[in-house]
Length: 292
Image (cartoon, rainbow, N blue to C red):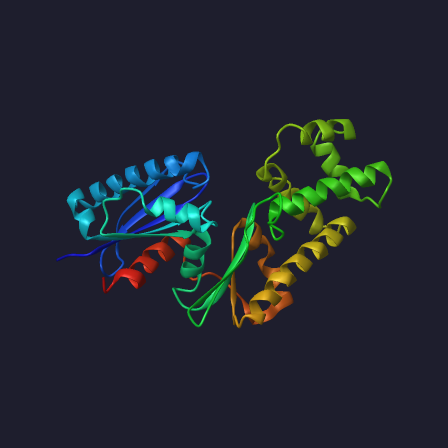
């Protein structure tokens, strides 16, 4: 009897689904809509995965009935809470077996080809996960309001705060702080109006290219904020090392920009990811269910 593995990388913006054979060769891949488990009780995620599964089986030319011989792993945004994962796993899936993980689990598995190691997601949000001697250690990932210290969104928010305080004359400013105020409307009144307009983490993260532009010019405030950012990352690196992690992969757009600085700061502890999260999901499916 043939056996198939299905992996899902369920993000807040889109959902990627991949079907693979027993050798993990990709047979079909599809991208659908948003799939955060915290949105509408996971209903959009359920629809995205269901439609994506139909698409990948059609691409592969495999009868949909073969889902009963398919073992699936979902790595889902919004899956930090065990209750959310368990509820989603209990839905009426057509697969032989299903396991739902937080999205950071598949990022870690892909980054280290399923072996031990840590991963730090540094994008609009941030989170960390390590596997050491098969044991899972998770940290952060609590969201913009109470966490995400390593994220572009938090750095962007600190940048706006510094620009406002500098314009008020409370702290020192720089060309960067002036550029931020100009970018957000040209006055503190305009910046306040901007901030009150239901701003999301991505709105603050969108300021990071401007930040790096001035950082690379040697802007003094950019240097101070980068030092603050690196101090947050220090906390995570030290936390991972205290739990026995020997290497940490960095993923996410913000992390990619920081990579050279992190290698300079932490040396060989920082590594590039070996593969993407979607491959990590398929790999985990085989690791978990190969003998099922």
